[in-house]
Length: 251
Image (cartoon, rainbow, N blue to C red; front, side, top):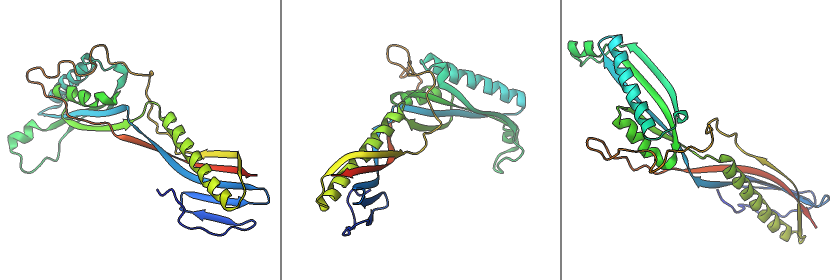
């Protein structure tokens, strides 16, 4: 988003000027004010990850499917807990056992019989962003086979939102100072300001900051024989934007 005006119009008494869609400027020489609406943003690297893990398995009957589900479910959640993931950070997403009435045509009769029932389960694991790869690795080594998507968040999103608002206000003052110079009138104090920010996401950490035990955190046992090494996963950058309406006095 450009930070400079694309057009400039001579401003007389009671005139109005609008530049780029993200900012509006109104100058009232009767009330000796400059009103500006402008948008800016702030960025930070995510420090919280929501890792989605799960599995899908097949069996010839419902009881066998449930047995597989029980084994996989307990193995995945058990290993996550052993690795130091708090119980409160593991949240169920979905679980189901269903009969497969429509199966691919390329399966043999025996394969169709073995895949008659399908069982699946998934969880969201909340972890510090730096441990996202380890969480995924532990789950996969324990039998998870599905998903692996990661949602990136900030533990203190309000702080980044406040920074975006502060940046927008600074930008508004800079623009107001340029306009005041054009009118040969010194810019005075900020009279009024309002902030329009997008609604916060519904996600929030529960129970404050999460601890992953002592001595290395998530991923205990990684690198042992038969176990896979973690993927290289780098947290994403989070951007928050804010629109500020500010009114400055003209001296």
